[in-house]
Length: 177
Image (cartoon, rainbow, N blue to C red):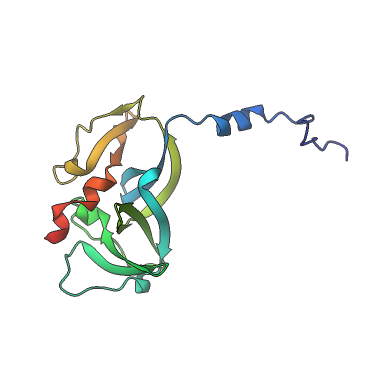
């Protein structure tokens, strides 16, 4: 074939920049998501068991449970609690459940699993905790105990990406309220 690169030798097409980017990512892998249409957060990928897109009718409401909990979800034969992460972190309005699917981030620590329902999943991103990472300065008091810190994405626009601590979320006394 004319013009087709030889994939074994690499001749015919310069892909070194693409491969270099894949071979040496900087930082640690994180999942970025929105809890409200304007609040973007991140979780370390190592603490995430799975990301699930669940129809709202598969989340079974539980009577007399905490108002932070949407209900339970059968996840591969295991029942997990699903919580509204935005309300847990102090947002006044609840998650919009009137849609075809709700993104749920399943986190786990020491055999305790919890599903965090969020507004939208952005995707995975390599973020460097060595550079650009700092303690969170302007976090609401309701969110502060669950933050590890933040990255400044755009200083002029005052845009930051806050990193959550999934262990602090799982072990919080707020679930008993």
